[in-house]
Length: 185
Image (cartoon, rainbow, N blue to C red):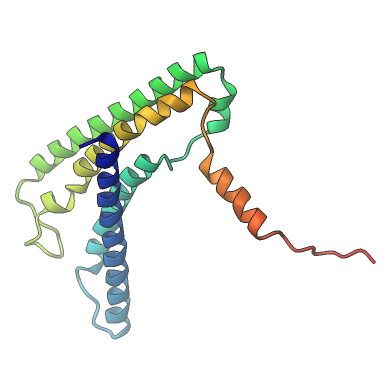
């Protein structure tokens, strides 16, 4: 299997997970609101919704990493000469990878400490399950960064980085020009 096909499959997997989590969280919030409105609040709603948001954050962060959609300052990096830009990018990528490897390792240590503890509102649901998003999400982030690394290195050596958000803002502005608020007579 080629790296490109693996990346496509990995992206599809992350997108599917994020879509399922968004749909589940949406349904959970609607159900929580409806039950509370009807005077029969769900005792487990708040804790479960919080955990769902954590899962969405970690898996969504891995997807954003794969797409290169995290906050950055490409203008500053692009202003550097390529011979300086490359070491700066390599250093930054190493810092990111080191952080998420440490987060994954620490997350596993936390799961070990949790033992057989359960959620407060649903004691039969193990905390190891609910908190597994931390090490799994961190590991997925590392995989995403490694899959994107060759393109990052090419961009650092070449013409620089494209600011995707800037290009999107320009295309939206071109598609929907502002209306004139004041007309001169």
